[in-house]
Image (tube, rainbow, N blue to C red; front, side, top):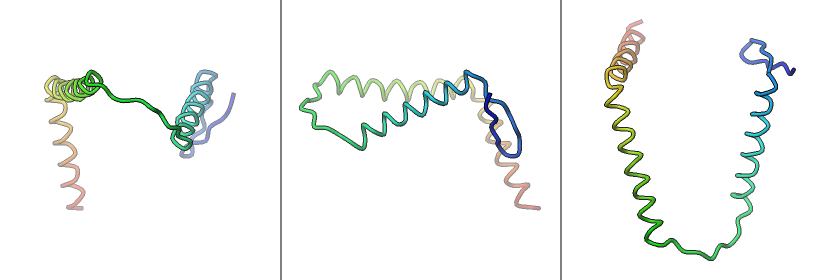
Length: 92
């Protein structure tokens, strides 16, 4: 087991956490390799691909709106708590 020091606390990394850390590092290294060493690609984006991206954007926006609708009370109380804490912090 590996010991991780974080903010003055010691905690042990289990085998699964170490494996996930290695996977994430390898993922970011491979993605950064693709960005730092680009290659020419001779391709085009057809209309079907463009409409797919538009569909992704619309679905994402609708998903966010639905999430806010379902959790509106929780979201509103969180905003109220943040605003009140800022007001109380300014008075002190």
